[in-house]
Length: 188
Image 1 (tube, rainbow, N blue to C red):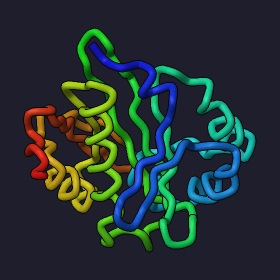
Image 2: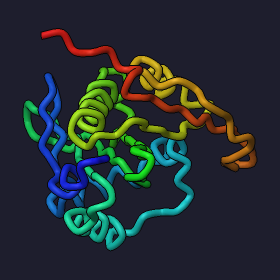
Image 3: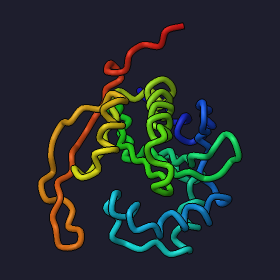
Image 4: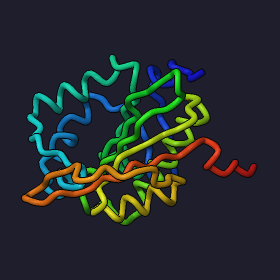
């Protein structure tokens, strides 16, 4: 059985270079600005242009959603917004949930920030929420993300053919998953 309060009572998770904090109204401006980046939109398959009101509503409603966990990725050094991540489609009966992460700009890619954030979230999902399985979708052209997910224990479980139509081309998505038992036990 999962610990639903671990979703409602959003934690602050601290890594070496980042902190994962509850997504809130203070992140609205940065969250909205990130949604305007065309390459980030392509990597996430986001056709819809977010309005500022949409961004404000998403950042403000987070505390009211008890069936998902939305966190902002912020720099430990200066508190700047680096992106967001969330667990969603939580299935208490199956002890599983979906996972999504978006860095707010390509300049943050390749620094290990996504890997660090994903590992922090998986540790929390398995050890505190009590999940057994976490899954995600990633487009096949996003090789950097696929490599990060593999390094965090995810394996390819399936392919969704032609699931994204972007600028006249169709792209497959991979379904990837990780089980609690796929993560090596921490050494003390």
